[in-house]
Length: 217
Image (cartoon, rainbow, N blue to C red; front, top):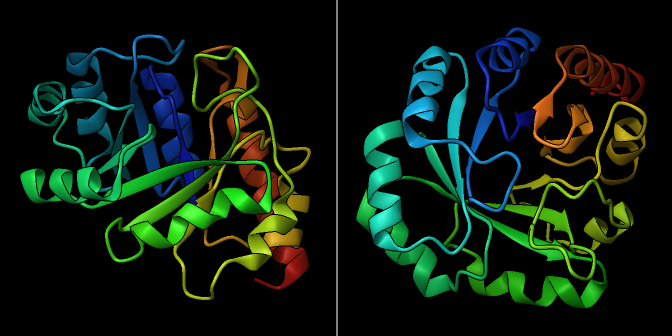
């Protein structure tokens, strides 16, 4: 199971994620987010992660100029599009940068999965996050979970990550109910918005491993 720690901003948090065994580390480029990071800082952190985990640049409806700057400064392994990007936009981004793309979806009901089919064969991986609460300016990182049983309706073979409200207390239940190919956590390993807690990162990984041991995975 892939494990992505997202919204990293400091060397200490990155080291904790890498040492715990993160497969992916995410850097968020969205000014409204408390996890927003400057491209230059993300580039330095990305170098520390090279060869140990895949670096993911997370953007929200970014235009080509913004993406050009991020890709040049960070040289990410993957791009994550967490806005309202259409299948055509996903395809254009892939063609422009030659990088795999994760497309995020906000879900709360079965109907929210209807749009997924249009991205099949376009996005390299999908990410399912909880729909933001009314009034939130953040498409993700709100610490809210959705009904993980909804994921059982997905076609077999869809490669995705589960996100939204995960933490050391509930990730075992998420794994039991959905058995996702990958999981993504951000606010669930923070002591305050945007401030990662190295102890919570360790607790999260221990909870994941305990759930895997219990399931025999």
